[in-house]
Amino acid sequence: GAGVSQSPRYKVAKRGQDVALRCDPISGHVSLFWYQQALGQGPEFLTYFQNEAQLDKSGLPSDRFFAERPEGSVSTLKIQRTQQEDSAVYLCASSQETGLNNQPQHFGDGTRLSIL
Amino acid sequence: AQSVTQLDSQVPVFEEAPVELRCNYSSSVSVYLFWYVQYPNQGLQLLLKYLSGSTLVKGINGFEAEFNKSQTSFHLRKPSVHISDTAEYFCAVSGSGNTGKLIFGQGTTLQVKP
Image (tube, rainbow over the protein chains, first blue to last red):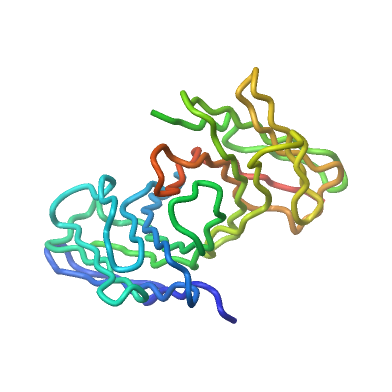
């Protein structure tokens, strides 16, 4: 289908390694969001893109987390020097319009990251 | 700041019985409210949304929710549940500012028993 696609679905890394998570939003969607969902919790906002511009990164927990969307479509979330507390499901979502709080977000199936 | 509280972490119910999943929010500004469902190992799927107008909102799979501004609540209901409704349900409010980011509650696990 033409939904939000995330890869890999599962990622296991050793503590201290760097990881990169990919998100392919729905074609033509302007807004892209990353969320972190810890086990048994609701998703928590990490960062937001309007096209290629990162307009809000207030949810990134530390400077080890970095996100980009260079051409305004595919986005990558990178985590450097991973730690055990980074273990979570990382969800990507996209929406059609921008600057409108009433737009429904379409979610991918997430990447489950496990740090050993 | 905005926040969402889902009052029940787990709701067990028998098949064909009615169910209500409770959600309260706090906000100093007008809000948009959403309910999402998450099946195991999947992302979130939109059930319904309240933007404006009628306070009773109907969604997919027979779910509905009622926005109550005075009680700052947005409870989700279904008159008769099915086994296939077993999942995690999240209430969310759109964040302040103009990014549209969502603030989620902790989630409610609906367990439908035969």
